[in-house]
Image (tube, rainbow, N blue to C red; front, side, top):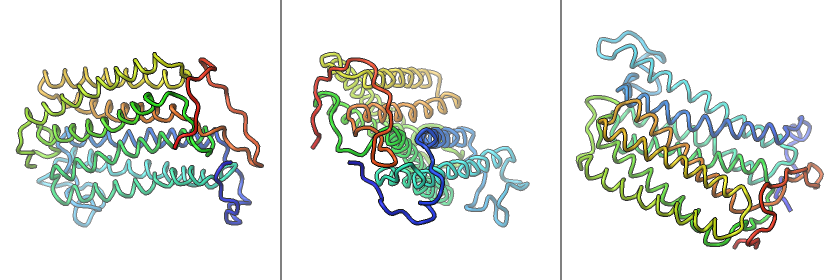
Length: 336
């Protein structure tokens, strides 16, 4: 049975319900806005606008908005300020996700908890952004600030899945080795993103020309990053063979192909930007690829198990579109 709050507060009980299609749309909006602010953050970095607003939470001492300054170019101030303003949109979508979860046809604990992560993550991002400015773009702060975004993209994809499934104990839709490989891919993605931030920390785009860089040297961390890329590629090939060797629904195959496409695009961008001396446009494209790859791997993970159909408002199940592809599944057992 679905896990629900059986007695929400009276104002919530008497409010109009927000249907699952709207819930799903808001969850997708969370995916897009969380990914988008990571991309705009990269624009701030490659344009050396990280200290375009040299204070936080104000832009300049005594002013929330950019003002004329003899030491900071106006364009850089407005680029950084625009990125700060975007957090309002991201936060607004996050709050709407929570409000919609409380007004769902059936209030569900797991769905609500995933929705709550969104505004909490936005607050954490804002605070970490402020700390990054206050420590003058020190690379550990910049790296941590970025890594929150892929994490929130992953949770937002789980939120999308929660608007399409119930809360029954997860049941495997693929063979155990396939699900294990999907989990290991997720771990390899964490390592890949972490190594990518180190490459950035040693590279030329610090967000401000005066910011110290990672002293290890870009060649050393780039070699480590390339090694992790090779491991990820090997795991991806192994997952493809495992999917081919077992009979699975169409969704895992579709998600796998999305991961392959996102990874291939990322690899091409990474190689080209290295050969061309890390041009600014390709850096932002590479960040875009990172969050897209994160979303694709998260989607692959959600397709390896089922939590049953969405619960209806009175305990009956809503209609759910049948899965395309083979109806015979290689394995379907409760997960521990």
